[in-house]
Image (cartoon, rainbow over all chains, first blue to last red; front, side, top):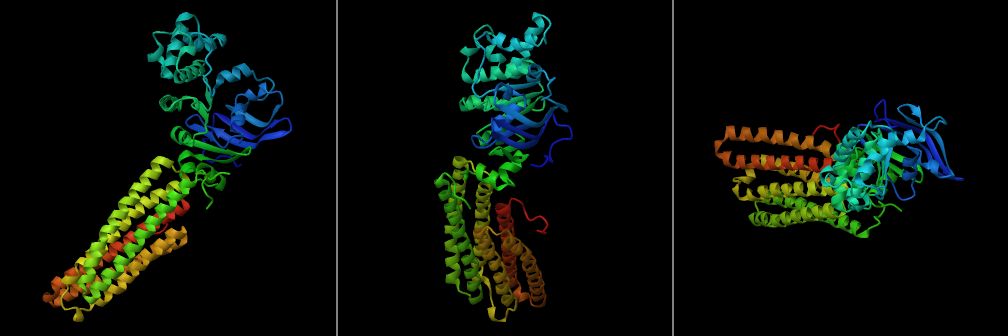
Length: 260
Length: 222
């Protein structure tokens, strides 16, 4: 895969020749891609194509899998994130993640948001923490719905609210990149629309990468789309171009439902 | 082209393409028969062309409904999306082509002194060029052939040149013999209709090119 010609000169994240192995099996084969801040980037592709695996290399989530091994270079603001000196906890504060199933802590709504800023020492005192909690919930479009019950358990919220709570939690530590792995697949269409609207509002403030099985969703929320197949990055380009006139035959077959 | 995993999607697209082919066939026939009626002064044939135009209108509505239904239910992407948008546009243009042919057919009874009217011999030749453009652009559509589509676009200049020539010819007739003004004006409208048909065939060719390869043949003058 050649270097993406459409990315800005200074992308937020830069991957070069990244391969990922699970034991002897190669899950990702020499992927190079730039992740810009100004656009939402969608990763699409059939199950097992490696898109989630690749997403997880961007904040070293694969470190938790003993058999996983990453080759190549991934940079955040030009600095290699796989050097031994990299503080992984700090890295994950800068590169946050939202998962497929909403996973709020079994704590109050307030504590769900306050937890990150507290452990990262981002707030000086209760008042400042209150401000961060409100700001994060507002940015996630959840404030109006929960402001009167901040002490209720996060798990008592609806699925869609829980997912927005998780996004608020990710935002609270003031990250630079937000990775989303199928953030709407457990949600109904209304809750999905709210998340998509939220992604659009957050665009430009954070570099956002979203893995999705819904091509309609990729088309709706992203400005850049990357198509993965069998561990390869087959095509990366402007979302409108990918969905109206993909250059690669494999991309076309996949997005038009002729795959397989 | 490989089949869709969902077979009914292929059936929808095949049906849509079939409707466009049917419209194209009717539009082509309308051009040919309107010219035939014009040359021979056969008003019955002219009336038949006018009457048959309704069928073209109905088919256009069917194409619209089918295309909109497919867009809504299948959310097509890439070449499928282009295919359906193309059908939507081509359907509209073919309906217009039918209207021009109908308009020619309506004028059949309004031409006097056919035998001594020289421009009347030029019009069938122009009509043949325009009808061939429509015929070939539909072949290009059926074959998804961008090269043939480009070739059709290039031919529009000839139709335009014919129009200019007929225009000058008719004006000189009117100047020399004011008694011919009424008939000459009718022929002027007819030539204009044929010129428009050529333009529409060009539009279809551009859409065919877009559907086939995803770009418009922009390096060719419209």
